[in-house]
Length: 88
View 1: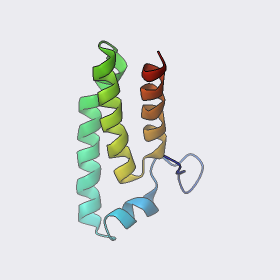
View 2: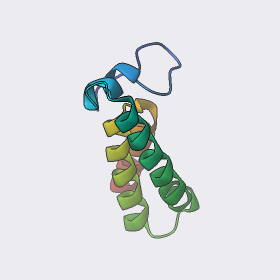
View 3: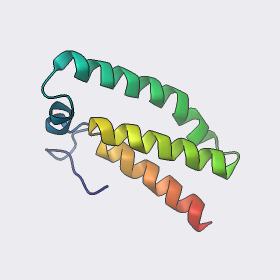
């Protein structure tokens, strides 16, 4: 994932999200709600440790969701979790 937010410190690349949704604000809101739900389900599994394969799978899934909405920082963190578990 070789992307960066539009401005330093932005959690979300709004231009990317707008491109993904063709400027449809309702669709963007729906995608963000789905991503929020995904975070709620997957972050506890990632933070909780446990089975490395399950943690890696959760991180990989969340990384995909982050890429869809332009949450590059979250995607990078998930990639680092995946890489750490692969290298271990």
